[in-house]
Image 1 (cartoon, helix red, strand yellow):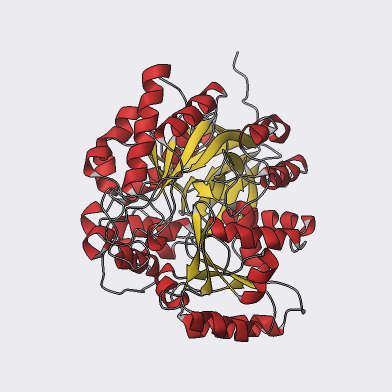
Image 2 (cartoon, rainbow, N blue to C red):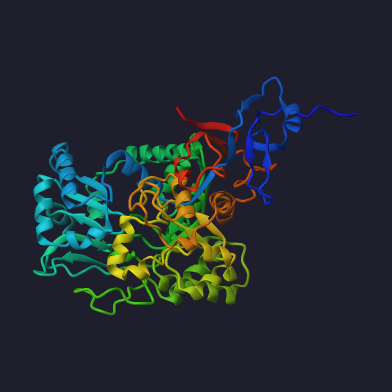
Length: 556
């Protein structure tokens, strides 16, 4: 005796459904019950699941695919930047930035901060002068000013900001950072490199500039922004206590419309404040919820190439401050990193390691190799974040050690960011940037992240086009390509941003593809991205985003 199957909550019909399963299968329809997919196939197999209370979604022939998974984002900072801060393009030059600062200062109450981002790191030499500080002081109208660069590692501040932070010409450079000084006069310029930036950021926090209301608004805005671009899962790459508290609060109220993982810093970063390391790890279960997974840690192993704080095997170009043979330094030794990775494995935590220079990548791989020799195989997946400059001999080691390449940010094409690298590394070395095809050929697990707000817009389609074309989708630097031999095909790129990123987050049994038993996280697109011209991928628009079978975004 046969029985009628229970009706679905949602049935999706008449579509071109790219499942991103192991066979890269296509379907026409699928059904959802209780937030999970219960059937995938043709309409004949799925339509019987339509019942009296079933919602039917007719795709009208449009493409649907799994939701995007962003493995590298900074949610609180992204929301704060969008809602409360002055926005600056890294293509703008000094005079334009000063004009914007003046306009913002005119609208800012006396004594309150003007905060903005993201001046191009290729402006470091221009900013690092007494004249530039004088001009910034004039534009600020007495308000303290902090402007973050396009890496978010460095700052440009005015005299009022330095005064509030206790920075004077008599100060020695802080450990793992430096104060900018005019090469001709030795006077402070307001340029803050790496940990020096933290002194100013700490002064802002101490002033009471940020409030709990701002934190909640910033996080809610960030979630909505990611949903708008089709993102249904993310990993916050430097999650301090307020970040995790905000995420859990959203989830407890039923307002978290994405799967959230959190990477807790092993030491306090220069740009964020609060407890870190063991003290923070001990609290992680208090932040765990149905959709929040605090199962990762974060190590900042070096800085950024544009400020000569990334660690390289070969020296930077000659510089009046660093000389002719400076290679940068790492922020931890191999033994220290071995201890951290080993400790995190004992706690069941995967490690995300920031490595901007090739020597930092080598050191991270060396440390993980040592841990493997002691601990043996692990089910945890450690990530090297950015994986942008890699010594050729290290390419194959990613797959050999089971280490994922976290490909972020979205700068796989010519940018002002890259122009800063050319100044400090020379053109030939700087443009050997992001060896993505070599990593793929070596069998590396590659995942996609935005590094928002380091990248001002977390739109994944911009990043996807860059991976395919190695050209700037915005039209900036027209005609230029960045190491085009490293381009990837769009089908591989879609896997990087869905099932591969889900594997890196340890959630591939739940998300990343449209298969029976998985969460019904999917997006509907206005075009088939597998069929459009490669230079049109960035124009893709998400028509609707669905999380656990409920619509969380609809394009107006």
